[in-house]
Image: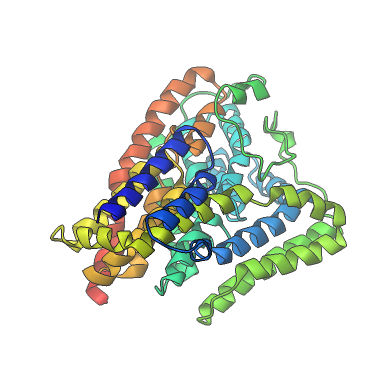
Length: 447
């Protein structure tokens, strides 16, 4: 018991220290996992390293490389421009369109890639008299929804971990739950902030210095589009015809998504990483320049983050720590209460720390509760994942901080910080309660 508690305390301490120091948690966690495994768990080094999730590595690298090519050859920018051109002067549609565009980009491997839409969305909101809070929430909900696509990081971690534990969880079901909840939140945002607050005004110049005073935008998913957004209605014109390579890339994207959907409906488990590698290799052979540029877009940071945490969790599992925590949760007297608390913990910690890290750490901790408490595995894991994500608009996270920093009117930023804090922290309570009512309780009733 003493060794188990020491190992758990080290895990929490390393997680906290790395987060405070803004160092990739997985890089610090991996060598510490080896030390703990060797000296506290009496494991061999090969046994410890075998816990590194190679399948998730293949998924992340394959998917982010393929979509990195789509960014490099201009396909993503073309799709964005074509979508915005269809909106025209229908200002009320802009938040919904940015929800969809952010979800699309977020679904392409790295969720934070969706933040590339933030400067443009907030600038358009300013010029069209749209409440910046509505635009920020629309993009935040879109990012959260797209992140759970079978081709994106949160989805890969969540259903990939469930699959390794022998829990049946359809990647399309997980994506559907995340998309449905975030669509509901988008409607709520329209109700709360959808009224026009002021007349249209001309936006001041939006410079990189303004972003530097807030959160830095992520490198992955960088766009060549003008971050100021359109200066007038004539700028929202349709782009020219796509190049032959862009047409081919769009066709490949359709093939990837279609293969995932069809195989999932047939009850098969699609290896999205292999599909991404195959399509990426084919695209790189036809456009070597884009293939080279896409190498820098592979999301190695997430690979290392997830790999280090899951390796340490593997050590904790071998030591019996995960089972001990699960049994403690069951002994609370009500497995349902334990499930709600686990979801709330995921949301609360994720509001201030890495959502990816939360998913990698908490999903395995739910397994004993699923095994012993009668909670349906697919429902609880879906709930934990979505609860950890919908709080990301908190200004204490990268996502929320970016939306505050890209708010064009500097005088509106304190209001944005206050409202995003209220929204993010309210999701810590609303998320677990809502998902318990619509997922866990019905799942228990019909299981």
